[in-house]
Length: 253
Image 1 (tube, helix red, strand yellow):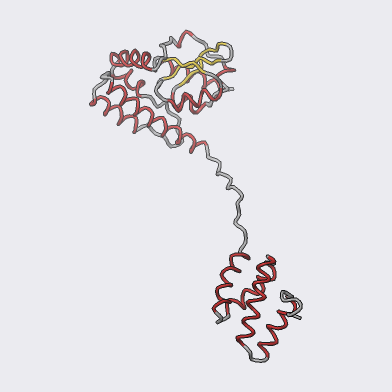
Image 2 (cartoon, rainbow, N blue to C red; image 1 turned 90 degrees about the vertical axis):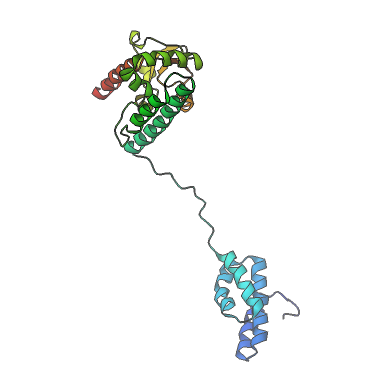
């Protein structure tokens, strides 16, 4: 039969058993290897899975080598389904945004020191206060200029003028505007409250947004992804008051 059909699986299976019963171990192992090769060629994983234990138990070197290949063929395919990211809790989102805000405000301090707007000693003191801002689930405005307004108003005026010129963000008297709620509601509330940003008007399809850190490119990109924005600088106390009014009204409704 094998002379007529060298790759006849049924004949080989019987031959393996026959050789073993006759005690012709080496011939039986050669027949086993031939059978395994045919099954590999045909990619018959179900039959190979049944044959694998015999290949692993074999003391015949070629059978041992084939067992490794068979193991690979019959191994279950890896699960390529993308893992669904775990949804963050609001507390975790607040912590993440706050940490990013602290980093961007520290970078702003470095910029102000480089521009000789504040001393290194003052920047160090402000940095310590920023790093002490609670970030675990509580929403706080994170702003170096807010601290500076309370502690050194003269330095704040210098910094506002410097940043307005450097980042092309003109100062705006925010208290003169009534922010349109329809525009405000389009932006992420937590980012606005933590970074200190207020959409105070709109022109056509553009939102006019007052910020406290015009150097924060990540925030500007995030807000501009919602709708085209023009950015302005405002006094920290005005931004804080506007945010308090906007989001206390939102909470009340």
